[in-house]
Image 1 (cartoon, rainbow, N blue to C red):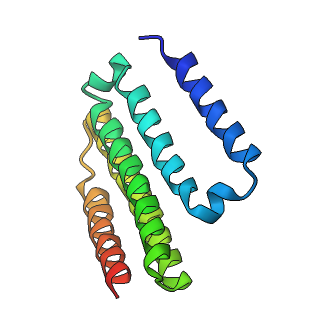
Image 2 (cartoon, rainbow, N blue to C red; image 1 turned 90 degrees about the vertical axis):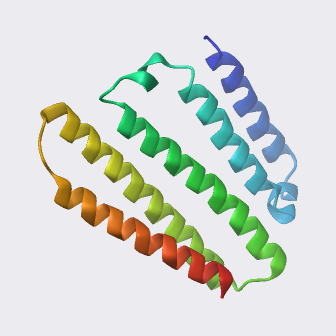
Length: 146
């Protein structure tokens, strides 16, 4: 499917609209909706490639998809957090945790890709990254609710 020109045009149109509106999108919080929309556009682009079904790339692509979904959820939580009045430090901690969680998922996917490609056994680093991912997930939940 050759939809990359359509997606590029949509991206440029969104950027022009945001820049032309001044600070409206930032002040209203709609900038987070646009970030989520960019994630959706990215996901549609990923699923149009045949490489998504390559047996070696599947762990890496799946972890990238999970990472993008985490970032989209991060923007939704950030918008909700500001609307309900959570302290700025709490919101910032949640955003940092979401980014760290995303990096860990991508690390797990990259390690799984390398294990599959080289037939190596590196379960220690995957286990460590998985434990760190659980810790950051827990911190994300704790900071959001308290």
